[in-house]
Image (tube, rainbow, N blue to C red; front, side, top):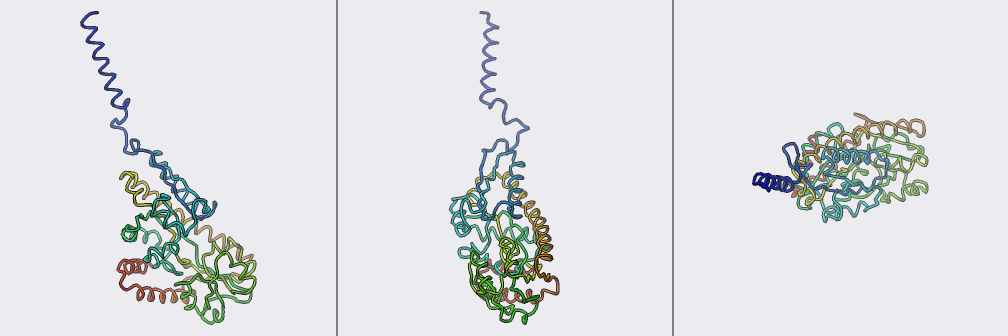
Length: 345
């Protein structure tokens, strides 16, 4: 065998070895951080049933994340409380039983009292929903950090409605509410009902329809999606709808350890997708509420209050703000969150 052949063979083996060790050409200048990142599956739990307009926004979020991460992140959505129900979600996400949750703030208030700043009707303005999110994100992250959670985005909830027994008419003044027994969930919501002039009665949501049928309560007050899901207007046909938020913050929260394990590029993708999903939820909510109003025009006795017509409701909200400030005067983070909410009204 000639010396030149031996050298040729020697250098050929070196070239092959270098190619193999370099990952067969991977990691070239055209590759991205996402292409090199280990694939991650994020489990997200929600109580909302398939088809709910808010859940459609969550599905949109998952699709955007997967596409923009080149498949390095997969969001696995478990809807309809199939993985866990809302009261379990604080422990679930803070202890990493699941990676993320979509949950309403009343289910977190016991462990995260600052979120009580959202838990009354009219607590925030739909018109500044997106601006508020951006401004509040650093404060929400600061509040959630000690609970091992990260705020990703909020979804647009439904407007406040009162579905009342026949003959209640338009509920616009304190006199209209006088003597009316309104289903409540306790806490500041009950205080809100009292400020309207109503008598709050604590009834579990699962028993509202029976309570309306039996006259245990005269009216349901809450978000229109809940009232619509049980077709309450068939029992209590006098519907007063407002353009106010129904009284909580519906947020997507991620376990902080899961968040910190994502690359910086993946984190950016998640937050940008969350912002766009929040916009999508706002559009979907407005369309869904429009359809609800149209249905109520033909299927119930509808009164739609907005702007100056809902001054009684706005005044009740302001009374709750004063109570919250007084009750939580030593909680600086809650005071700051109330300030942000009030600024964006």
